[in-house]
Length: 66
Ligand SMILES: [Zn+2]
Image (cartoon, rainbow, N blue to C red; front, side, top):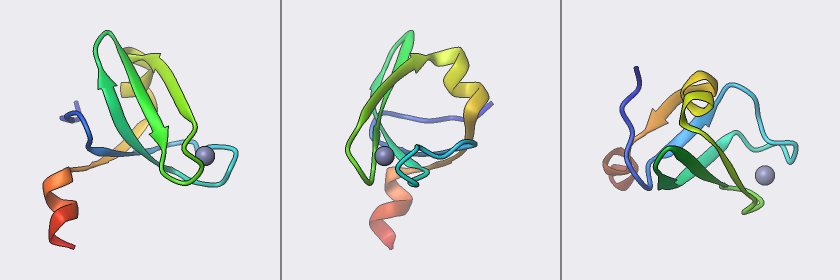
């Protein structure tokens, strides 16, 4: 199972209708809230569904090195 924290970026299996496939995790609880990195749209989904549709996590530490 993927390990993720608040403000990590998430790559999902299905892209957002706007074409972007990178999301920022903005809330973590029983539900997960994500913000699309391109259009800024927020979506909330049950953590179980998030785990299922998650492809990979880009840690915020990793991003700072780029
Ligand atoms: Zn979008």
